[in-house]
Length: 224
Image (cartoon, helix red, strand yellow):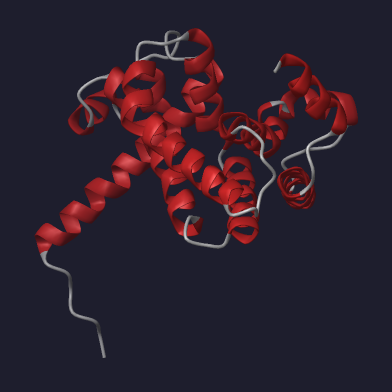
């Protein structure tokens, strides 16, 4: 039996959403390759395989396309965090790190664009920080602190813990072009991504479940 056809309005909405996703996928590649300032709307349209006027039908400007690229990345990270935030400390942390590594390796371009925006202190950084990053950071920091208070994690400063976890999860992805030249291997191959998942989760858990290093503890006491 043939499935009933979708109403015309539903089909049109689905087609429009698919085209927006296609444009954003293309924009990720262009912005990662050229940077925001050097990328042109003609390049964005050509990468998406459409006419420039079609680009402006779906997005008001290059600036809006850029914002949506960054927001789509941060929404994805927020969703990963949301899936695991209710899990017990070590299990939730391991799952979060693994999911973050795999997601970034699958689509490294938006991660590179975000890092470039941070390094350049770009014009979108304040809004991204306020709307997306700060709430996510506060939620992660609160979770680390709760686990420290419960005795599940070692008493490391929560802000530095989050920075270290970000480095463990993302550094290999960010430095992939250099790693290919140094090692002759692709760090984003499926096997190497899974090795990075294992290493990142191991170090994150070992660091948070182990004792503070004696040297760090003695330095802290010397400052008190």
